[in-house]
Image 1 (cartoon, rainbow, N blue to C red):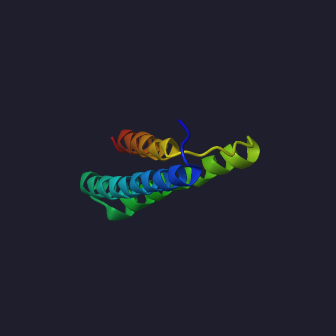
Image 2: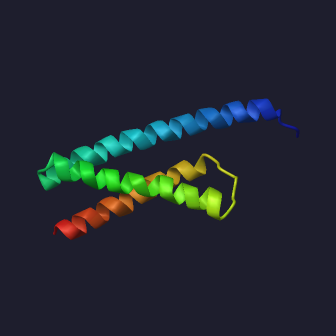
Length: 95
């Protein structure tokens, strides 16, 4: 079965947009939870900023250093894993 490449790109773009929106919602919910648990919006904001800066750095390594050009919507799901691991570390250091 042959799939029209233009149609595939449109569907993939929609999926990517949905995944990015879910990642943004996840970050807001995690920030709220961090703020409540740590009792400091400043620390919660800085924690998420530090976690967020690891994503572009790893993307540069992925594309520039390793030379891999392939990027799919599944890569956006890695953001959820990175945020989860980072927030877990914040709670461990806080305790």
